[in-house]
Length: 576
Ligand SMILES: [Ca+2]
Image (cartoon, rainbow, N blue to C red; front, side):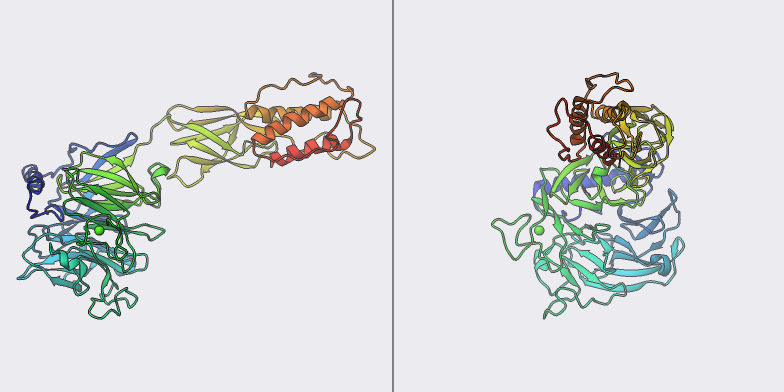
């Protein structure tokens, strides 16, 4: 395996790149990478670590997870190897006879969408011969090996020239159940722009090798019906986004640009009319979503993997992003399909060739330089519990309400609200430790603290985190003409207002007649204060306020049942 798409460039920079890869090969041969010793190790963002899953892989080219979690790795020389429960099985799943010169060999693997029932596995490899050609075949699995003689040839690609580079080789099933095949242009740029052969294209076929009649050039005279998109140089890797089905195609560039392309049926991605974004724009060709220049030392985009796993193990900000790598750069970066921008992730990797996100939310990378598979995981940090927000911030004294806490809840064990134990769960499943749903226990009126404790490490407390509010009051049904407003009515309202103001950190209220004694006549000022301070808190809690009865309440006004009742109702609304 050489650099995809870069052999044979007639310039000094190219010679350097080839040399670099040869050095990598020499290291592989010398050290063998057969043990689980830690390799040099990638440089990762804070909060991430990596583990070598398996070494002992000679010139690996691609990998994919079986639906049952086994990891299958293609070796350029023709072996398809299985890593099962963290162990590289000694017996290959299958061995195909290949031409492995240059960039040729066993280059791609995919599992049938119905693998669990039909055991079908598909591979892409170079059939030796004069001339050689690439092929897509199906095999039938029986446990950890292929059934002998089970090869079923789906598609023989066009004969290759003497050029051993630009073979493509990635194969994946789309959400439509069709098999997509990325094919390089065999170092002949004109192949990419003709519909008369399959080179420099993305192809789409049925799982039995027949051709879907809704392919974009199915009815085009002179066109190969398998073609789904054209104008590609060496699409070494591509990926479908779980959930959305969006397709991104990495195209290895020549001297200038590496591309991430938007996979759309019938598209012409431009090669060899131009490399990278067209200038001036060409309406017949689709520009890449993103491109990066070689910068002198980078050479080939490889390994596309969307971060949309069933279990999110990385921070939530990674969800929906697309990992890609550069063979010579030795780095992994993160493409944001929402903004067509990229950011750094990992570096210091010895010639990465493929990336996959595992079902458990970890990221696997395949290093041809190390002859190994590594797993990158987000590292839970103990004692890092934190509450950033509580929503809603108020509720009923009777409890039983669900509230959402956002923050950091790795290894969370217990939650107490106002000193009472509360049941909780991860809002988005155990893979997302950034939000929890808590059921409030019953508690008396007031602002209370929430305490969270991890299984090991430091606890965290948030004071005045939640306001318990009354929903049942003294003389709960105030009756016109029969109930006289009492000091107790105002005292209860003041307690509720104080609780709300505490969670909003609004400070102590300077109540008039702070020690309201039983029998004290309720005055207009008592009501006005309640209105003002309650509405101040309610507005901050995003509750709309409406005018009160007798908005011009002044000293000497007789306090009516409705004045108390309105305040109570506003508190009941906030309590939910
Ligand atoms: Ca292009």
